[in-house]
Image (cartoon, rainbow, N blue to C red; front, side, top):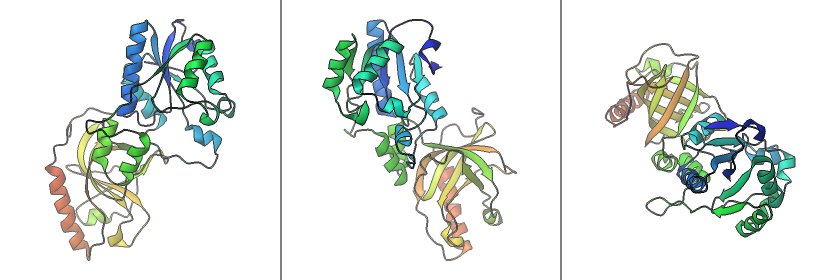
Length: 316
């Protein structure tokens, strides 16, 4: 996949089959739409292109809007690249772009980018105020010789619809396994290890305090999780806690990770975690000894889980 920021970067002059969206999470529904796009492109002898934006459109329209995201922009590009699409075209979402009507946007796709087929998600709307729907897009496309195709909606085997908003809700409800099913991969956070109070170390459970690199990413709900943690290119089983540590005095919310089978100083190092399973909710224990006993049970549970790839050096 080539990532391009301007139509002139393409250079090959091929007409495009394209789809447009923010694609937060690049979840199963998005992947189904992109697969349909690639099929349409192959049938018509076109190159395939996903048009997306580096910043959530509402952040441009509402200065105080702080979206909760499933992916950083870099993660999104990587996941779009996994789909096999030919191009990812990155559009700068500006107030001027937001003012374009659907017809004007379609005209721009045709004239500037050479889009001859547009595949639209079954419930997707675009153009100023999202005022028009699919039938209008078809009519506008005809005026510039563009075919507009409606994508087939994607449902899980049990009939559940997949959406970025639904995945965000699942994560805040601690339902990380259901979120992973919709994302097609476990949800992940990346950050760097910062200093802490080292209370866990005194209990035999040293933890890495994770400062998440992207503050707009969704933080799963408070609780204790089994995770796969990547440090120095190696995967470890981990116990991760999100919350205010009620047993030691309701301190500010922290993300703390205990790596099974690892010891050493990791301050300042990069750490990535993938959420495998929610183990339990946070609660206040009567004593540190009672907390330690629970942590030992948590560690036993995590050690017995089938977590793929632990101990393998696969990622930097």
